[in-house]
Image (cartoon, rainbow, N blue to C red):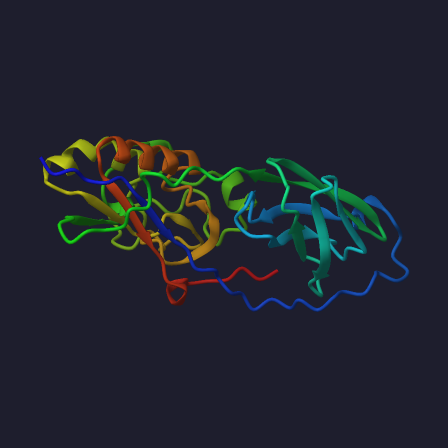
Length: 273
């Protein structure tokens, strides 16, 4: 019997948005009240890995982020410089990791003229590569799957909840994306449905699954996955990051490879704030 190696290949390209990164001047004459205090809504990337690179640039999203000072509590993590957008909605933070940095969670404090806030950055150890990332072979049988059109394993995520649309700055309206009578709407397929059908795919003779992008998309007609607005999260129509990890683990148990490829030229939208 032929042995199939286990692998996961993920090629992710960054998305470029037309956002001004000019350093904002401090708010002159503005009172230092809670209304003007900095607010952090999102950190990208949401975590980093020990030993991957000695430097990483974070994109912090929120409000009133015209930072005058950013400091992290770990001695092995240094802030080399910062730069905020003109509207104060974005803050870039360049970090340097020492060679002896250990896994843990860094707490970084953002200070402005109007107040201060904090955000967390988990630093994780990388998983062992042994037995993984073996690539594709000429004898592999690849099956291309668009998850939304395959199988619905969790009907609860067919429609977005109002909290999801608000938190994600989404262009979608809650309760207005799922409709199997419309060819360009979401039809309910998800990662759990795909996971439930792994034995069926294996029985077909498939050895590798090629998924269309599962990252978060931004419009009601982006069921295909090529309208990404967040490369660090799974689209809520398809499930969660835990569902994606569970799918990969289950596929590996079935001796199936997971192949995911994305092209920057295919990303459909940028969120501007």
